[in-house]
Amino acid sequence: MTDDVVVLRYGHRPGRDDRMTTHVGLTARALGADRVVLPDNAGQSAETIRDITDRFGGPFAVELRDDQRAYTRNWDGTVAHLTMYGERVQDVEADLRADSVASDTPLLVVVGGEKVPFDFYEAADYNVGVTNQPHSEVAGLAVFLDRLFEGEELEREWEGADRVVLPQETGKKVVDPGDLEREDGGE
Image (cartoon, rainbow, N blue to C red; front, top):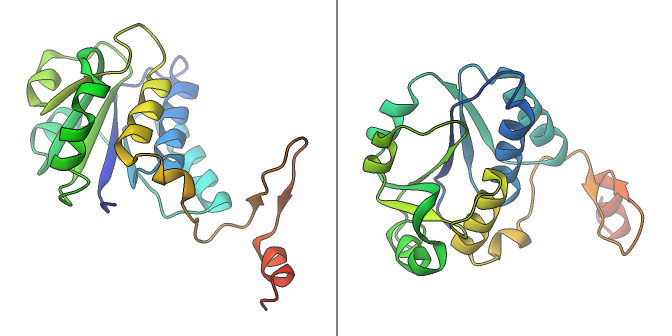
């Protein structure tokens, strides 16, 4: 896997988009991206994502930037813009994977939060649609990243977590990672 899959959340309307922007960042983190770039007015979302990373592990970075158009235009790598108007993800995923992840070329995944200006479509190497139907940008990002990494991101090991969720059929079980090491015969 490449060390440089970045999700850029274009646009953020404080009060209206707080939860969605936060979930874009959390989805990026959970499903294999290395960092998320948020608009500079999304500070609360950035703090929430950093807090989750501190508690549940990383690495994962969060940046706030006010130059999202220039950031995208000047990106040194592949740009994939997620839009319902793009080519079907199933038609371009192999090419996109070969152009980015397989070749260690940095990938910028642009996820809109408000009306995306046409220059993002022009700057993109790939305009990618997940179902070409209206739905959540969080769902689109999740499907896109899973297709990009071919499910490998689901096996990721997390570093520095102070809690671990143990999978089980029912109920919730969250433990300190040190407890797991002691059970396995570690420290």
